[in-house]
Image (cartoon, rainbow, N blue to C red; front, side, top):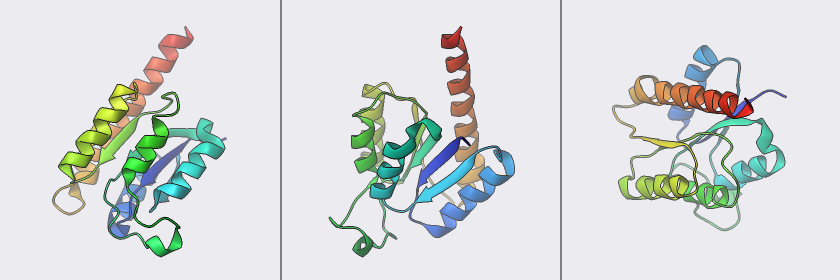
Length: 151
């Protein structure tokens, strides 16, 4: 079982940059990118034990919603699912939608998820400058916490 980092991101340029950074710096993890919450939630339900981290966008402007019944969806749909299960991996919320991103973070923290927010800016430079270091720190903290509780 290869540990996997899941990403909800509809923007192809961002998704490719995230995959490139992860492939270069965190190559020991598999990477799966979703542009809609429905298949991401299905993936979590099928094999959550493989997931080591999750990164969520809120607004999914580039998603083809005709592929999925029910119309528009957002990263909040994944948060609603996460609220129904025990926290098992860290989460990053990467969204420029200030209000919704803050709400996502608040809901996850209320349910004891390790979560941080990154604000995308300046094209894709934020991915290497902010997102990747935050993800690495969250993973390190998650591993340290598991080791201390296994004790």
